[in-house]
Image: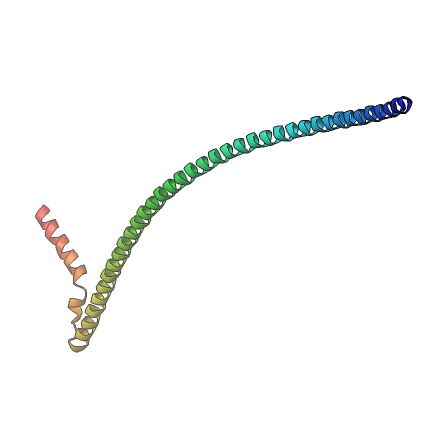
Length: 159
């Protein structure tokens, strides 16, 4: 029996050693798996941190771009208001000048039409007067005789 026990012990011992070896191999394999998992986890963590830093920089840049856009918008609106005010002033000045020119034109037109109408009325009245009261020949050209008379008076006064 001692022989069986020693044989059984040896085979059990080999089984135990084999089992311990396979467990050790499993443990070593699991340790390598754990180390590989830890390495992958650290790589992913570094990648996430790098992405987070990039996102933070992008957010900062977008904030600056938005601030610059807001300031440009405010400056553009301010300048646009100034331009609108200047254009309104110029437009008003031009309208005033146009109204003034229209008034002058109307006044001149009224003067011309008034004088023309007055002349036409005088001409009409004169022609009616000539028709009703004919003028003698001696009154038709008094200017020429007056000039001669004027010369005569000057000549006599000089002599």
